[in-house]
Image (cartoon, rainbow, N blue to C red; front, side):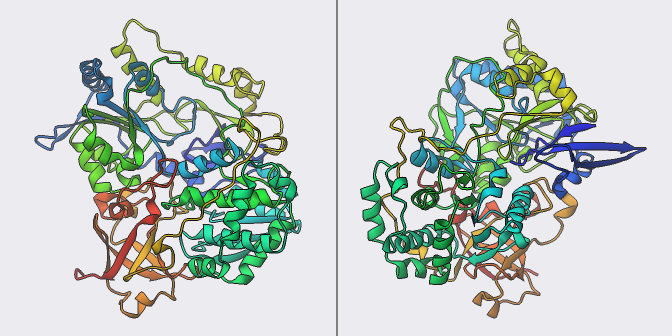
Length: 636
């Protein structure tokens, strides 16, 4: 059966599910123009995740006075939740719905229609992409990415921190094909995590200092009169930008980023012998100066003539391709108040009037947000409803947990930010027990809160989303084909930028922070890169037994005073986690890598160590700004 992956991933794979007796095999659809038979190991093993023994199959009520958790019927759960919502209708800002992207399907968050209708508070900002999106909107007026297929027209590719195995195997495939065609590839990253040949030449940069490396490249290009004047003429502030570049000291920048002049010259040559594509990973913007970093990379691509041409451009995220339009009817009411995701506990604590109810769907903010223990406390202190398939750290804080259906158990349609197709996600299996689709959960609640109003039908929502997109395909046709594509995209910004004057903006200030130079006072930067085996926090309990492994460079001097055969502890102002320290080649010596996704309840959560911080723009969480002390543990 042809279906699709709807998980939190930009690849948007088309899948084929084969069933023989009781065996299930999930493979990539070889007929799909982007997937071409290739899927990641996480998706190939999804049947094991879907059938985990700790799967929730009944609604759970948590009596926070006695601490008891008991199963309840769905009707009782819906009634309790609806009663709470109705009691707060007069003050809708007292309700905070929080959403993530556990699924990118059109029907993934239908309860949003209910809460938008009420005019509740809204969780705003970002845990992942906000600073980069804000930077690109500042520079270009919108976020637009080329098709990944355009990499085949690239003579050069600069990859800033995108792991082509754990983060995007299809990106890795396209980069490898470009290399086979003769493209030169440079990867700039604080760590090499088995990126393979697709990484090309690897420059191991000091974490959080990419803007200084880029600044050094810009100064070299300026000194050698290699700026593209036609590209500068397409900007509104070229003079101020050039003045900023003239103030850049290459030697100072190299000291800050811990790279050499040969790396700078290699990057300069690749950018000026284009077309050269730029690939941006998800870690660049997780520092306080994350937005500024993206802006300087934008500028480097811009002034070398690599914006607006096929084979160039910025590969980050593609929200504006137009594969789908909105499926739900428009709701007139606006959110009464905004609560920032990156400063969740601070904003919840200071909210006036207070937030009394939190709805969590498609996300695990305790594990995935900053300062996990503080987030857990804030949720526990409020009436919290969590929609999830497992008793996650966030579900542990809930008054009511509603069991939800997972991928392959619901019908949906989904687009991707890496290709131009809309995929049909067929329902392959029935969800277990009382687990229900997010659509069904949202509808049942809406009917209780607004009994006189009709909730949109699922097929109508899907067909409307398709009709408002550019595929020219309707739902019945998509079900037969499995996927449909919009016409090929032209290179973004070939004619004009999305600012009203049609011109781009360039950065004109390079901030220098004291801690940019190196790890200080024995503290290391804390990096929490994703794992190849698991999707974020979708890690089964049996894989979280014992101490977690954390990694440092074999050149890190900390190894001279620590016995790696004994436990260590990672300590910050927000917490302490015990671990096993392991040397790993390819990491910069100023960081410790603590793989992301472990749970608080198993003492394996990296974000229990991270304080709440904001990036410079975009209201994004600055996870990687955290410094940590690593020392020998006194506990065996």
